[in-house]
Each structure stands twice: as C-alpha cells, then as structure tokens.
Image (tube, rainbow, N blue to C red):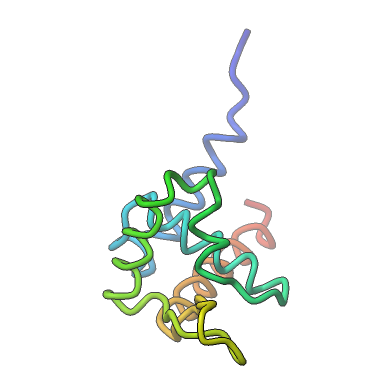
Length: 116
C-alpha cells in the first residue's frame, strides 16, 4: 500500500507558514494551546482559564497551566478576571498573537487560493 502524500504536503505547508511568523518561537505544545484558544475566540466564545486547563487534548492540567503562564510571560496571551467576576479568569489573545495567527491564516489562504 502506498502512502498518500496529502497529509505530508499539508504538514509542510503549515510548517512553512508558521516558519514565517513568530510562532516558530513556541514549542509545538505551546502552539497547540495558542491555536486552541484562538479557535474558540474566533467562534465568538470567551475562553476561561479553567476551560483551557481542563482540555485533556492539550495535556495534563498542570502542564497546560505551565504553558499558559509561559505564553502570558512572552506576551502571547493575557489572563484577566472575566467581566463581572472576581473568581473566573478569561484568556485573551494579545495583539502579537492575533497578528501572527492571522499571518499564518493569510499565508495558508494564499497558498490554497493559488491551487497549492
């Protein structure tokens, strides 16, 4: 059985797009956390820190919390109290994160529009 090349080509296209952005500074695991947060925010839903930490697809809760702290320390996300709450914290993308995620999306859109 011969492997189809679509998956590998797609992986290379995404890696090239990320390589042209500051996302290359992040570990693959940190990129997964950032993209997961961005995907929820893009759908119009606020992201709370507990939602991210409980997402088992991103890793163990303590590990995800550590990644979130690293992302916050390096200006990828902001963690603030949710509006009207003194307990619940919301995770927001910084301008740096939005700019870089949009750059990767634009690069992918351009590549796909050109027919790959």
